[in-house]
Image 1 (tube, rainbow, N blue to C red):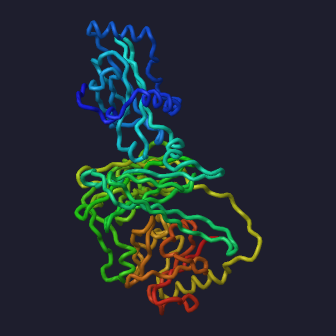
Image 2 (spheres, helix red, strand yellow):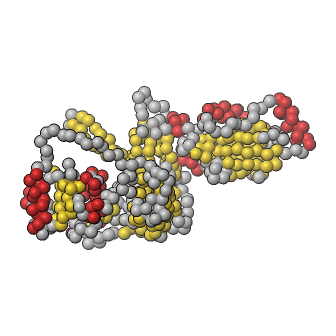
Length: 501
């Protein structure tokens, strides 16, 4: 189609700039991308002049490719400007496969460029490319967002020798309207192992970044070849937590959407709990919906997988056809997680809104690795007396007991699943991270012991530490006076977990 209005890049376009960019961005095309437009030559120019005199027209097709995500770029606005007459502009938008086509063009020399919000988010100028359109020929032009390494150098500067960091960029938008949100905060966190004179310690790193007026943000200095956790917030509104893999010397793009007070409503599972517990367990609800399917490595539907959306407390189980559906979700960017017995969990970022139901597909392709038998020589941490004491206490009637022969443990996908029906125990999703939080009566967090050793932060990380298949037995004491004397350490409950090791 033809657009007589000035284009977004022609206002400052000059011939020298076009010549430089057409060459500079040529190496950025992926090896499997289509070849670029035909080169300019004197015979071609003569043919164009003749074609123009006869009123002949030409057709041109092309693609726009995103080297950062290694995928076609859909929804890009492509423009071609006639170098001889800059008022002559052709505009078209790419389809879902990044393709475009313009029919009935006037033959001649053009500069081709494109616009897409992701280009602004990466902090780079849209690359331009030369295109010579010949009447009667198969005209084609390939436009490309440069690779992540080149973008990282342009945005984050020259890297020191031995540096292996990467970066993250994107746009923060309103979930309901898609409008960019300026002055929002994007928070990136990750854990680092530090070895110094104090020994080996784990440190949590937290890097905030402010969005510009157009909603874009950029963060440099992130650990390359690692996975960080990102989220966006403005005021008391926030997205969920999302895992983002960071490339070495490259930029990864991660957009976020945030729901408003009408589409993401705070929900407190236990309004009578302490203020600290309420903050730690507050969930978000809304009118958004998520549906999808779960498949196994063979591509067949997988039944019985558990799907949850982190920070909402809402779950679903896949049916016989592998399908599932969850309603009542908040608007914004969140993480959907699927778990199935025998497979590593799968996590996918989803953008939810209350206008259009979202969908996602999970495919389990990695089975849980089972290690061969290991013989350990030395003094065991746990003695036969520990097991005997467990059995003796189970006969007293004090507390609640779960053994490896109980169906509730056999059918559990996570350890906290086995505790959901335990009297005096409440399992709620954590709003500060992935997983669940274990609460006792009154909303307090119990002390957790694993094989007789107190586990720091065990009430929030038990699922990450132990699989249900490794558990021999669990003891739960919701009252301080019920727990064995040697384990009475606070005014809340006690959870004793005994493994098969």
